[in-house]
Length: 189
Image 1 (cartoon, rainbow, N blue to C red):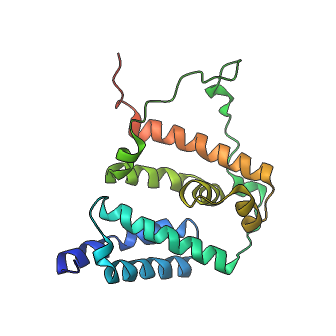
Image 2 (cartoon, rainbow, N blue to C red):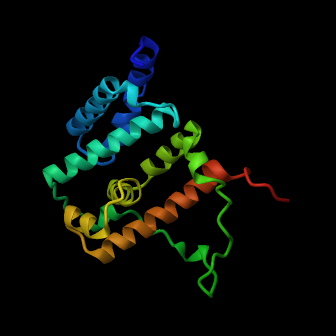
């Protein structure tokens, strides 16, 4: 399935792959893994069955390349208090009993939604609004499925700091997605 239109479609996703990789790697490394992803995709065109979108398939390849590089290089990042993001007051999202003051919008079927390229663009937009450290911790945990202990070791942070970063990232993503994607999409009044 390595025809010209497939090659063009794969190559057209290069800027998105580089942008995604920059969340986790420095500029040169991001360019390299994006290029390796394109090469792997073109060499293994028969591996694309069409069960998912081309973009989803490419991001899957890219995720594996990033994880491999992170584990190989064992980069250590010094995290300062400023990089953890602004301490947004999330208490307003909860009532006195600790339950949601207003339930999050119904996000529908996440697997189907993730397939939608528009949603992917909004999710990318929201991830880019996070501090670089928060985006990296969130992606390592939720996208690359690193264990908390691995993240802490990799980034030289404590488990409690990691939990705070994940919590803040999830809350900020929830607010951003509610405002930019789910607002007005739920049926109601």
